[in-house]
Length: 140
Length: 82
Image 1 (cartoon, chains in turn yellow, blue):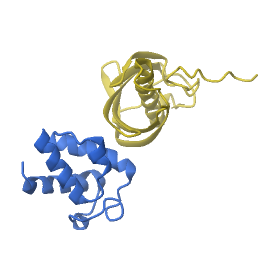
Image 2 (cartoon, chains in turn orange, blue; image 1 turned 180 degrees about the vertical axis):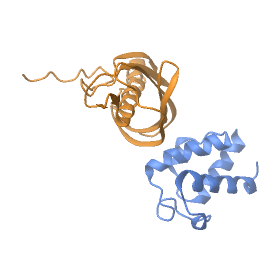
Image 3 (cartoon, each protein chain N blue to C red; image 1 turned 30 degrees about the vertical axis):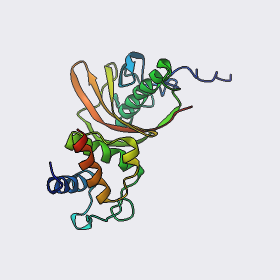
Image 4 (cartoon, each protein chain N blue to C red; image 1 turned 90 degrees about the vertical axis):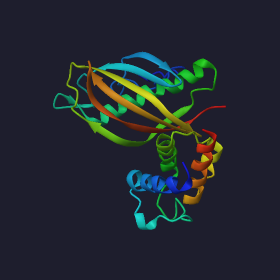
């Protein structure tokens, strides 16, 4: 079976099992939040999500911000990639069955670069935070 | 804030945020060739400067930063407009 291509209108092009966003909670040009129920898969080892999975979830949430630009008519969402992670701290890895909330806010846009700060929480508990830099090629 | 105050604060940002050796910092130092910063660091640098000095560095000015002197001047300019 040939899988159908991603929906170009979707801000997040990932599919399961790489997809780390189950539901988008909010999103505009300045920030976005989403949630993900941790389940067994490539992001999980020993019953807990890898640190790389936390970064992936935050990066996918950041895509919602760029997607909202297209919705607002400011520009098309374009194609982006995570190019840098700084000040990344993990308090603990979320366990299978826990609902993680991702929150990403824009610190600065500079040319094709988007600098954001992000955090992951389980309920009110902060489990990870950091700064994430994206290169975003916006379509004219 | 005058330039006498700007210089040590900017230099400290370079040391703390980008692990630049204090001895390498001088007014004509090139951020890339002399201090080892790359284009990705440039975004972090602008954010660090704006956060520290509570000013806004316009994108066209940020793009022109090549040396430590450029940073001091952009920050000074940004503070005057703030």
